[in-house]
Image (cartoon, rainbow over all chains, first blue to last red; front, side, top):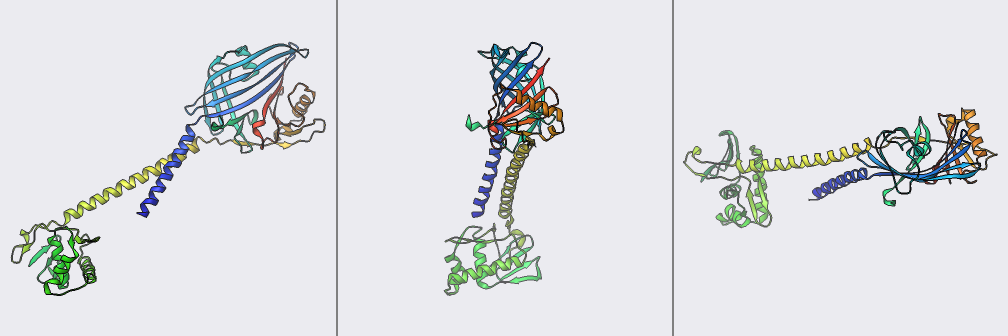
Length: 168
Length: 254
């Protein structure tokens, strides 16, 4: 009888561990990045500032959604001449193999309040704001934490902090 | 008095108190009188439980003897040994708690002395083999279940490791800069690119629009493009406070 109880406990533990791992994989991964960009446009004698945050959700069915909220500011002679709010959502498919991340943008949606064109967004925010755009990157881990940097040829470009599900 | 056929090859003669293998006198075991009578009682019960009292009466009481139940236990032990010795490994005398004993095979009928042995139909093996089959089935199911559970666990682990991100770690080295009032760190590969490094530092020095605080930690990343400078700006060491970091790009277009 004691043997059966021990066996049952062992089986239950194995099944529970397997279920936990399986459940953990079912959860989407959310990654938040805050980006600033300063572009010195010598041709038009202006400076463009882009500022905003991106929340990317990677679902376990190899699709994902990215939401970007921010603005693009145009300055001439240190005076703001134009400011465009950006509020865009893009849907993508992705694959992660070892440390290689590939993202293909499927659709781009402009949300309420958005005043930036897709071209602007593509140029000053993130290369994914264009339908059909393919982005390849290498993932680099920062100090064994939940933070990853998306790199180009091992050169980090964007820092992305994993948002735990229980914090949302 | 009867002759019982306990298997295809073993017979029990309750008259001569012998268990015989293949009718060979050389392979014969003699058991005690009381054991013999107890065995007869068990065989006659055909697998049903025989109470201790009945066995005591059958083994000793008929002769007017009064013994303790300890004697019965000893007789059963001896009987088991004898059955095993003659080669009947599949015959069990099973004690039934607070009731008595039963034999794990039973005789359909026992012949009386003088009757032809072939006339008696002894089907001892049936219940035994049924039990064996049931036991085997239970074992098979248990093994299948165990294999299934372990397989599920291993597959889940494999699945976990297959999709586990195996990213290399990015490292930075401290680069003291007296002109810049911040803690500046470099990706090691930047050091060998002197021109790029000086441009990246110059951009930082000349930039008065940056939202970089004086106490910020600045990490300069390498870039393939000479006109694109990529920094990570953090409120603390990147390994300790990665959640406070943001990316900062400076570029020039002509």
